[in-house]
Image 1 (spheres, rainbow, N blue to C red):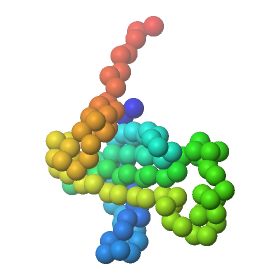
Image 2: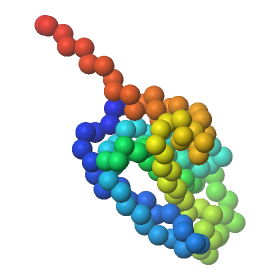
Image 3: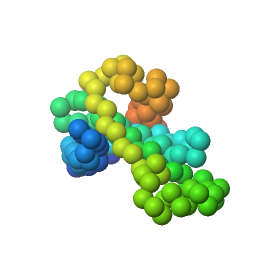
Length: 126
């Protein structure tokens, strides 16, 4: 999957000094990697910025598939406003993919980088 060619505004809600804040930046989509572990779905999206940085957003939330297995206590937690089930977000910024490996799991970075490479187009003369 190669990304788009135009920059768009990307907004991410992160926590700063214990309070939620929305940060925004211009980014061109490069790639996306998602996985489900222990009932949570985590999605990473990589963007190129106009200043030649790589920005990666991370969203982790309870996977919808897991909700079928939640017990009554868990549903009570949700109803009473406990926040463990709420999505969490993070933003990582680096100059290179290698630098990004110091901030994120190397396997995730490798997958993001691999999907960011443009897929070659072969033109057929048919």
